[in-house]
Image (cartoon, rainbow, N blue to C red; front, side):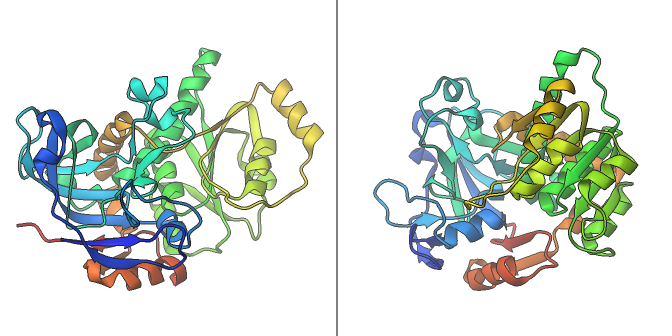
Length: 368
């Protein structure tokens, strides 16, 4: 079968390759699920892997099949699989268990292992292929009515986890009920985080560099969120006018913005950090003022990476709710389809050059 892969450590090595079709029996104990891939979303992670910034091949291979945002249809299940059957629509999670105590209780996204296993990212092949097989415990069923938007479930799970963790931490306050939130960044993750917060009834201000109107700002307006361009309004100014912010969700990967968020956060507030900055940039911050505000304001900052199965399941619920509350909104995020695995070069061009793209995705196969 065809697959799109890179040679980890070699920049711009994206290529089409042929690999064996997997089988249900590849997974032990009868727990295998064979899936025909229909769509795969791609993002900055795939671009960075192709640039050889990180990523490693599975043992015994010199290549890594990329793609971690899957959506497909079950074509076969092992004898010990329950709750899944052929023709079910499914999404697979990304991280796989290591050896830490957290991995052993089903929360591999919280692993303390120095080496981690993520499909399409590190040491495990991904989903940008015609088929994949996996253990049923990592396969999440998607209702057929959500088949047009199911490919968004993986990024949705990232936002779900970050926000859930903030609410879990804030149980320390007994009566915490956030009213105003800020989202930093209006890419796919920022849009989805804004959506979740709006579904929970919060007033949301989302900030990004681009000047409105843009497709992103119009999407935010459609769900009742406020959009501000940081070319004209700083985060601190936004906090003064539209805050105090009880919750800030950072989705930029820009370290200076993360530290600005610490200053803009209101008393008893929670800052969720999801962006990854791979550089070594040094910045100056108002250290004393930031420390004073955090201590006297009982503030908290939490980093959040990846997501386990429970957050994918939360995402299914919120995507269904969003489809009722804001019909058609999620589908509008799917702006740039790429037809077929053979178009991998166009896929990477869109990721690299197309500034108006919200979500680039590959139409891998058609439904039988």
